[in-house]
Length: 68
Length: 68
Image 1 (cartoon, rainbow over the protein chains, first blue to last red):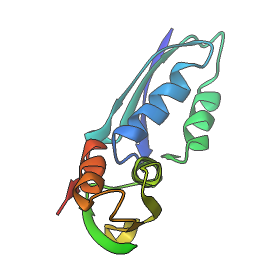
Image 2 (cartoon, rainbow over the protein chains, first blue to last red):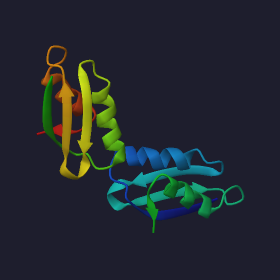
Image 3 (tube, helix red, strand yellow):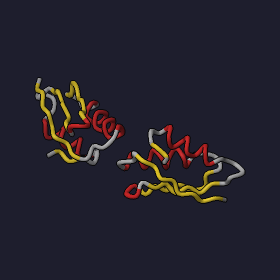
Image 4 (cartoon, helix red, strand yellow):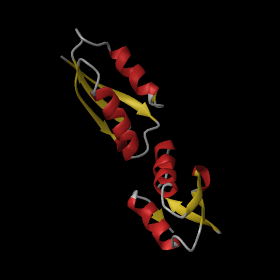
């Protein structure tokens, strides 16, 4: 299990929180995801034998946000 | 037919645009709705014999935004 905190730009409202948490949360291998909107942070807990961090970042970017 | 432009605070992203346009657009008596995100404006065209402006404002506020 690995825990990472990503800096994600462009999340501005509750809909954005849902878009990120929903899309990342449904990925196989992701055990938990929590957006801190005020800090532009996304905490993700995942199993590195099932999913890569790159795939998680890509999923966030597909929702229209920038992982920096 | 009546056309009004409302000043709506709190719309920050494309999801907000969809939330406002979707909820107002499906009201009976509303013929058109367009959000100008950068200007915090919502243009609404409606038939005043079918719906009141107050009902339209209420619908926007139910989505979490302030009509000012």
